[in-house]
Amino acid sequence: MKVICWNIQKNNATNIRADLICEALKTTLKPGEPWLLAILENKSGGDSVGQELSTGLGGSWFQTAPAGGGIHTRENVVLVGGNCHYRWHDTDTSWQAMFGGKFNLQFFSHVASAQAKAETSRSRATTHQATVATARRETPWDPGNCRNPVLVEVNDGSRDYRFGFVHSPGPQEGVSYSDHTYAQTYFSCIMESLQHLGLDGLMGDFNIYGSEPARIDGGALQDVSFDLGGTTFKKTTSSVGDSRLDRAYLHSRYALHSQVGLVNGTIDASDHVGVWVDLATCGDCLHALAEAAEQSSDGWQHLMAPVSAASSSTSNAMDLS
Image (tube, rainbow, N blue to C red):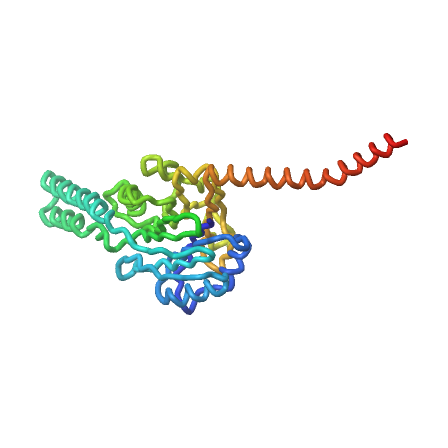
């Protein structure tokens, strides 16, 4: 089972470069293999985008999954599948209470600190009031401004797979009084909320610079995209930079034996490149080795059969003489 996640910048029914996306993905997909594609940052017309990509890739189904968000952040995740059966999709909102609680606590602490400083300052009362008013104006985001993780389950004919897809808040979004950006806090909150939902993997645009822990969710989900390099294009050179904003986390049963890579897209398709994972467990690898060994053995016996017969004939002829 191959799973692909690609952030296509502000895509909709009229601006999607389906031709470039399909051209890039066809070099990644193998004939006949089951696959699931998640297109992030869809602003509108998700069904049209899904239909066009499904047709171009020879897919068998598509779905538009609303991820939520505020007026300026609301998006969909367009899901497209091939050679697999769609089960269901949903969104997780249980992380929101934790996100709001963390930033509200920091906000009230920030305001209280500003008030305490104003009361002990020798500046004029109007300056005190202005300082406190400034602190009060820097309210944190309501969690509803963030997009929710989209969850989907598919079946490839032999097993079910459950994946999550996320588009985190922007890497620079945040408030001055917090040591963490919204994206960093969002990351920790969704990992806490998703840990009991039985995910096989989580992929998306996490908008985090630097390295987060390689193993999260109590060790069940592991970052398998450490060595991929950058996933966004530089605007000045049109080459891929060093920022690894897009990542893939897999359950430990898949993390060791699965393959991971980047979709060879161009900046004309999106300002991001896609990330793909080819899922395999230890059992899958052993089964593949057993099949290869069996085919190798059959081939060896087939090749040796004429030689053995010839040897037998030669031996008999020598005896007769």
